[in-house]
Length: 125
Image (cartoon, rainbow, N blue to C red; front, side, top):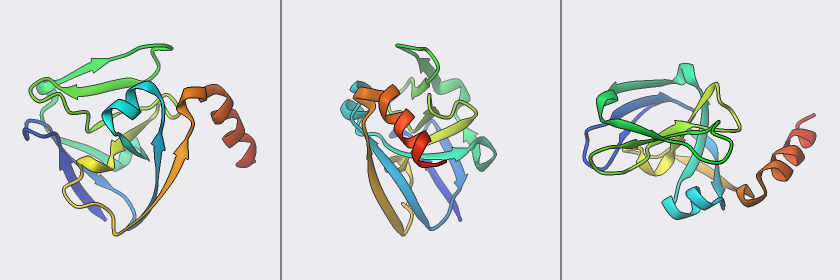
């Protein structure tokens, strides 16, 4: 399915190709918890920026791998390049115009990122 979304003021608009039923992550790290980000990580090929590249700014911290992109006008972060998948894109499901029909929310312990990511890698083997 094709979903559209964007920031609060409308300066940034995008579309994604994602299934009707998705698994999303709620992270407790310092930035995600404060922003209320609900993660849907997709391959970059499933994302199209429709408008607003000039309205985006980037913030990095800690390892610098994650590229947190924000709208310069309204401050909303509708998507970013995640540390866990730097070749992909992480969409804030809360910034979609219409959310997927079925969402399973799983928790991610971003406060202990290295340990939690390592545990997930071992489970997927």
